[in-house]
Image 1 (cartoon, rainbow, N blue to C red):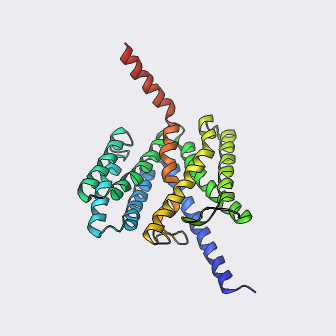
Image 2: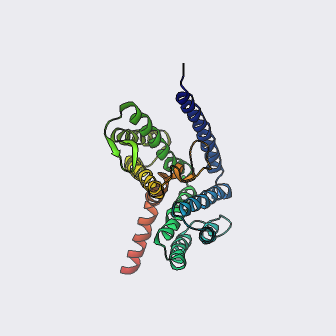
Length: 275
């Protein structure tokens, strides 16, 4: 017969699974639609994350409103009906961080602009590419696959804790399991959908980045003295709790995706200098 604790854990697992599947389905639908639909999805995500960042930093209500308005400027510019995701939007994100620092005198709040704005820009840039749908799925799904691999391998094997002072439940076995699962996913994407070699080979390294992002968010919560970054998502906590791994992965993935264009641009600049 099940104990009350076991029943509660099963209920939480069901809630978490259903909510996770619903979020994944919604995200993939918006990603498939692209354009304004995906931009609006990333904007709502960004605004939600900046609020949670401000809450973890113990910002007051007026400061949170200021941060929302400030971040809204680069997010609006990224709209396909406006300038779209480009270097101008990148400059506005850094300008938002500088403005936040100047008005609040708090580097941690200014850092929140970069923490939130750069991943949004990165995801929109990747989706904009000719093979953007496939590459965005790769960038997002490798984080999910890494999380799943780390969870199940960590629970099955256990062993030495990865960072007991920050996140007591994470183990080195889970860390390796997540990296291996992501590498296998990258290989499947390469064989089945033609994922370029540079992205395939980078997948396990990005899995490490994803887990570092997870640990960083755990450190932020521990410093703030809270269990979750928010309560928006049933069984999952806040938005940051779901995208903590994707946040550092997205900008690096965007750089790798656009590497041929960056190399071509640099070559043109060099030819112009020597002409």
